[in-house]
Amino acid sequence: MSSVFKKPNYHLVKDKVEEVIKDNFIANPPIDIRNLVQNYGLQITFALFNNHDISGFLDISGKSIWVNANDAPTRQNFTIAHEFGHWLLHKEEIEADPKSYKVLFRQPLGVNTDYREKEANAFAANLLVPAKMLKICRIAKFNSMQMSVLFDVSEDVINYRLLQEGLND
Image 1 (cartoon, rainbow, N blue to C red):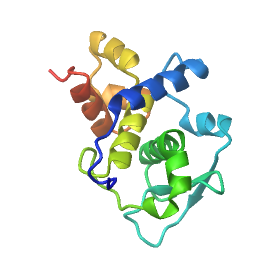
Image 2: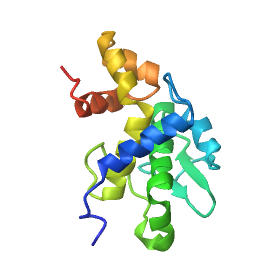
Image 3: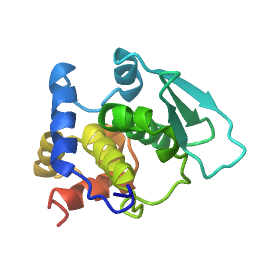
Image 4: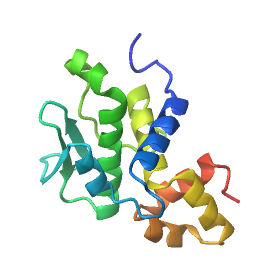
């Protein structure tokens, strides 16, 4: 089955996020994604890409995540978390068929049709803005701008997470 048409397994994604949070004793925002991925043996390399529509990519054989140095720090955090999601969720599949993994141009959350991209986006959003922490912020009446600063992500990511959790009133 083509990876474009396979359905994303969001249950697996949420379970993996919970495992990472638990295993790394993460209790408060912001999630230090740069340090976290290094705990898993991955190196982060910032580079200038010829194509500005590339946010980053995962180099499995080099155990590294490449990130667009020109992107805003909040975008870089999401890119790192996204590629980390590929590492944890899709590493074996990509190793088995390297041609199936391609560097893709950036797209808004929810637009991509490849199940691995959807899973990696969901992983990044759920890891950087965990549901329990988001709910506490909502109860405390934080607005999306305050939450974006607290979680060190863009307001788009906060609004996406609020929508996912049914907290966007």
